[in-house]
Image (cartoon, rainbow, N blue to C red; front, top):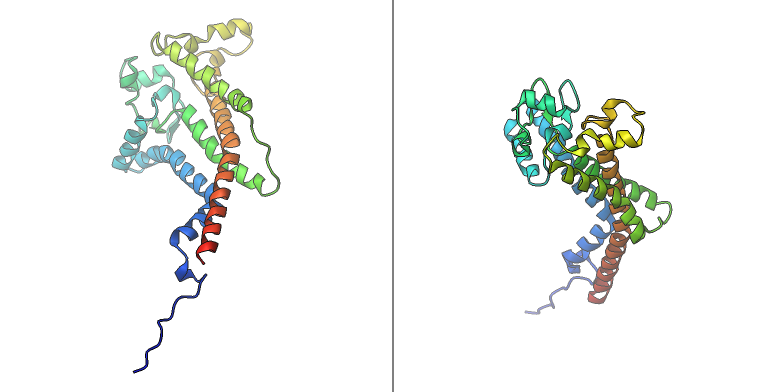
Length: 254
């Protein structure tokens, strides 16, 4: 009986292309969207925690609080609240509703109640940091379609990170005197420098529109801008190189 040679797949057909050689170019083309999706999920989960608590999914909400407790101090007086009468509460209001304590390890355990609403699973600074990274990653991808964005230099990155370093370090030193007792709680130094020209609520405390609140939000946004603007051109070069290498490998194999 006459036999025929086994038919081999034609070079270059999908059956002859390694899965990795198809995956790498796809990631190279869509890495910005993948990054934005992952960052959006990471930044969005803390907001889901109060939503879950509000609808009665307490197990899911508490799981998110526990997960993000390893990444943030979660102090309630420096966090946003959803589904309540106010977006932020003072230290005194938290102590009245929770426990009359200044111990940060106890204060951070307060996640809210049906009357006050439920705490976002990380602080206002962290919300600003990671939400801005997510937003700037999308903006960078859109702007990159029309023109080549200039690179951010090392000194430019340091300037954008400097507000975070100043604000975070000064808060840390201030809190060594005790929660609610440090120089960043009264900001008497700022009141002196500005001649008390601004309302008292601007200087003292952490409420929205206070100096502390503005500094945490603006330094977080500045941090996010610096990270994306500096890192993304390097990531773009990396994925372009991997895509080109994968294409060369596929051509040689075919």
